Amino acid sequence: MLRLLALLLLLLSLATSAQTLPATHFKSVQAFINKMVEEHHFSRAQLTLIFSEIKFIVADKNNKKKPKKRKTITWDKYRALSITNERIEDGLEFWEDNLTTLEHAEAAYHVPSEIIVAILGIETNYGNKKGNHPTFKTLTQRAFGNYRRRNFYKQELESFLLMARENVIPPLSIQGSYAGAMGYPQFIASSYRHYAVDFNKDRKIDLFSDPIDAIGSIANYFDQHHWHDGGEITRPILLDKEQQKYASNTIKKPKKSASYWRNKGFNIDADIDQQTKLAFISLPQKIMNETWLTFWNFYVLTRYNHDNRYAMAVYQLSQKLKQKFNLKNHQ
Image (tube, rainbow, N blue to C red; front, side):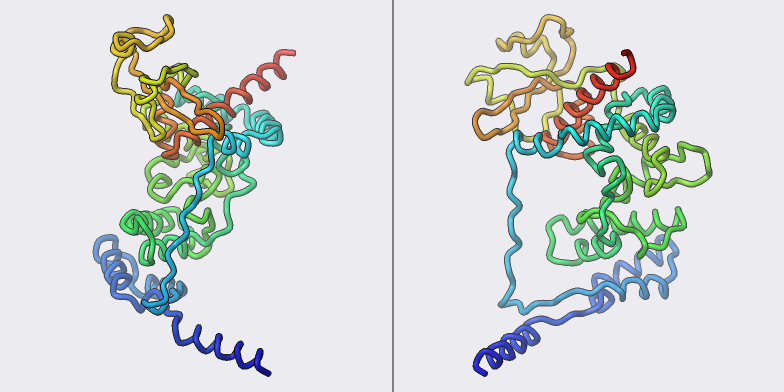
């Protein structure tokens, strides 16, 4: 009896400390709807209808929980999760199945096939894991809820509604990642609108079920971010204690030339041209950090995901795929 009473009291306290309200209850959402109607000529009735489907749990101000900080895993663990034998084998199969399309994309945009395949492998396991989170709900809750980068998500929500209208897709039907990325390549809405292409020329852009459009769109994304045709990506380098201060855990855009770094005493390989812009990164590991010399194309990889570990995983997976693909096809 006492346990039942305690349970009832707990349920009563939860009911009084939090309530569920539709998104349209909030003035910030109403202002956003007004903007979409006035600037982009959306139907107010339709927007009000779909936003009313999204619910917010409004907690007691005195009972708010601080969001948990996500732990950053070391590069060695990140690499082990990203580059697996299964992902390599699946990548080779995807490459074979889409060989003509990949060759077409490489010829059109000058982005290597292995890079495109590696991106698809790490993002969605070649389209097999695109995410099952309702994207409209995700973006709405992040744009108007208690999230960091709310302004970013508000802009993405605007792009998402425009993208859905332009491609004649019901907004509530779209699913993606927990953070709002979508389709084979996990494009956010603004990237979908700016970089997605109709690569198979069927008069529609489909990154949700069409690997051909996905391949062309990834290639176009890197081309638009000025991928250097035939340019090197990265190579390992040993740095002494003093030099390591120039190797950052965060993204480094190559700005100084090989000549500049040689004059500072760095052991830059002789085959690298004096004018080539270089940067240095450090990848934290459990035992000893790895240090790498990076070129412009590595920086371009970080435009897809702003994490050096991600860019390095794409590079290393691409090299394993290329090696095995060439070996398999030249036996």
